[in-house]
Length: 323
Image (cartoon, rainbow, N blue to C red):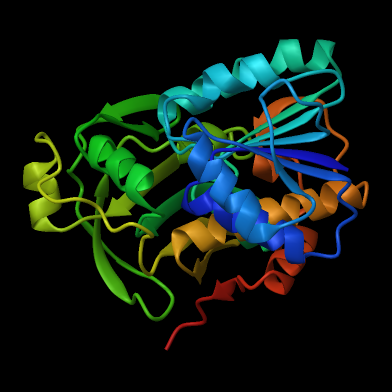
């Protein structure tokens, strides 16, 4: 398998390290970055089979780990016959552009997967798994905590100041930074105030739960985050991100009774995204991913199988069982 990783920030570099240490059969692992010295450093630190290459290099799997806002354009350029493109962006505009590539990807017998990260990505798969026992899904609510690195922190800062999309039997726009809700995440995060923001999770979840009445997404933020979201960031973001978590609540009907289930996971977001990517690539090598077109992660993998592989890669899903 030939793999091309575009972007060597927190996520890209972390994925390359995991790929080198994995038992996958990798013939060539190429890294590309707009800062060639950064790509060279990653290749030197990781050793064979990692090499610095170009976007034009042949690859079976292309991983886009660049800053949000650039991945829709890159995916259009890099998708090719039989290729799988895994995009990590949590930008609404990127996800829309990626999903718009469906016809082109089908013509080339390739696959473009949007939102291969902690949220969206893992959050979508958790939602599908949580809904497994329900006969009818009425509501899906996603919340996330933490950022994966400087680029991710800047994207979250922009998202909090932008309009949020919500599904309420049709699309509704809501102001970012509103709708405060106290959400409880897996340890060590626990409780955090979460707010509406420009998050792409509903765009992907509605593809699996089109009959739901409500689909929402929120992100954790402080009062300072909300009031400063319209300004440039007041201080440089943490270089690698800190603790992170994702939580998904699914409500619906099981038989004659209404029921609900909450699932989540906690890990530094950059590490979690790298683990999600590695898990998808593992399933690709096993021949468990054979779709064509452009779609979200939950449409590509079988939820239980994916979560089992993810647990082997260090991120263990949890179920809220009550107190």
